Image (tube, rainbow, N blue to C red; front, side, top):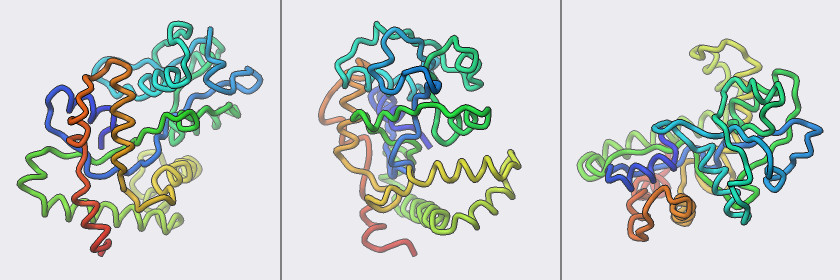
Length: 250
């Protein structure tokens, strides 16, 4: 699994990878503020300290989506203090950080377990709509192992379909293999994941060319990649999803 940001940036660097399905059709990235802080929307970030910065070489979707959201709204990132993201949220708890990035499927649950009811800002509400966990492969695999990829993707999507259709059974399976043997946490994570994977718009895993164009354009506007328009269609292939849609998950 890769983030679409990783796929776009690596492809721009000449690495021949491309997406074959978007498992999380909506990103799990959110930005949290404390109740009573008055920070309810991105416009309230001005003059505040935001914990979203990543390290070079790591997945940096928190800061990429923050930057895209701020620019989409016509705001100036220079008016925001962006500090490194802390998965333990220490600064957020002690008040030295006003807003922290988090995943709705992980960090948000952790913060709520601490007894907080944070305000939640979703980038998707501000026209920043990214996929999240995405299945990717290489151009060579697509060209030379297409049947194997088709069978792999069909089995993967069938598994997701089964999981979505049987939450109780899925939780039982998760509990057998999860490192964290806490049913409440695993249930909360599964429930947070469901609307991001099964959006009700298309089949699970489906991708839309316009979404890839929009994500590519947002990263280009941040200066993170070049912007050759002919590159966008190399980021993904619909051949396997189209075939699965036609033949079904069997």
